[in-house]
Picture 1 (tube, rainbow, N blue to C red):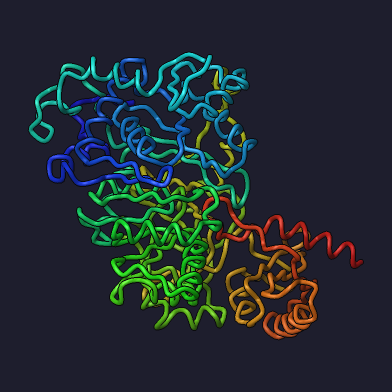
Picture 2 (spheres, rainbow, N blue to C red; picture 1 turned 30 degrees about the vertical axis):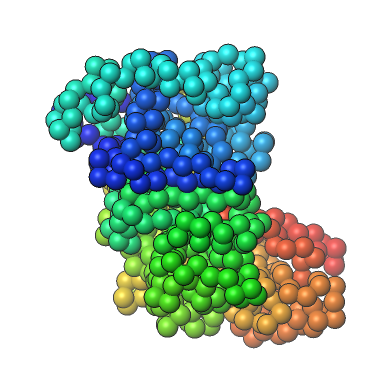
Length: 584
């Protein structure tokens, strides 16, 4: 870490100091617990994050240290995030919904210097201690058993003893006096976190976030959507709540299992939204689908809500229409587009979707994700499955030509995690993550472009039309098919809830197959008739490319763990391959 006081300080946690002065007694985080709510004000979260940061520093946590944060969403989770940012350590964030095996693999890949976690996380660390040889700096959030280390209470005590100044910042920053126990001076390029992808298109990958990443994300989200202090957000995706706090917006964490958003209880979410007069909300399409269906049946509404955000996967026009009916009549619905490695990239508002692009989507044009954020550069280049070393080796495509999207900007991660614990000791690079870097990154002088992995095209207005994941395209001997273009047309059938186009066989000679999730029983007469309809439609739409098969899956189509919205086509392709083999 370049701890050079002459370099500009960059740390999104510094926003808390300003907000604590401007809105000291306003709630920053409200979290459902046991039928009630925990609360913390902006002044209190700023003071507690500073105290905890000093406690972390006193126990040896700081720059060059990696700390796994394994705490359930709530007041303490948000406070600890800002404390770790102030400590200069690199946070490791892993979705609880990844499953134990993936969580252990992700944590092992980071080789953390310690765990800040609930008792179950500390017990896991102890049981698997040989896989975490460096984890000596541990804090238990909850009851500590036999494993030693600090508790969050003792960490606060350490911090109170070390922190003799009201501000964690150096002299001259916001006019505060220099503290007696200085926290690190973080720069734009210093590492801030390792955030793991959801693994929807392969094993979860660790994405390195710099302090500039978080600051740019907060700045761009606030600027683009006009977020102002005083708003109240129903946060159905906890990480977005961190940006709310940094923008002066109260974050309400409702009673729900955040690792299974599609299983949320609409009654509890409506109750929380109305009890706290929420003015905005962030959730995946699966949540909005569930809430809007409930509202349609019951008449429930959230009249104070003026901004709706849907992210994680394309949101169907029908869900947009239902959602807008249950909120304020003048509410806006935005669908930000991006990825763990590059967020945000683009955005589009509901009226543009409903008034223009939805009809074209249903006709197979792809999904319009809108225009780019000001801080982003983007291009559509010729599709390749091979590494691209430099930008000079790319072929930029013309308007309307389908290719792969590449982006660059201060919010775009420059690299994946590159060291495994077993390799780290020898100084060797992990071949798996090294391959991700080679395949996903393109060098352009001092800049790095990220290959998003999505395919699509620009229209005359420089809007990007998403046609699917590059890895999901179906390449046959007769031509190439793109998932979003085909599935959108199949989904217009009244008895199809959703569908998946998958390829069976080696790329270049794949058989195109369509798997549907019908709105009726998969073995019913109506479902069989629907399959015949889809076969006829596919033969008409995709000619001269033949269809290998059309089937109705007896269970709902599998989806990603983070948003419960992205269809997991890899597992569907395996299922389709078995059906083809069985038929043969």
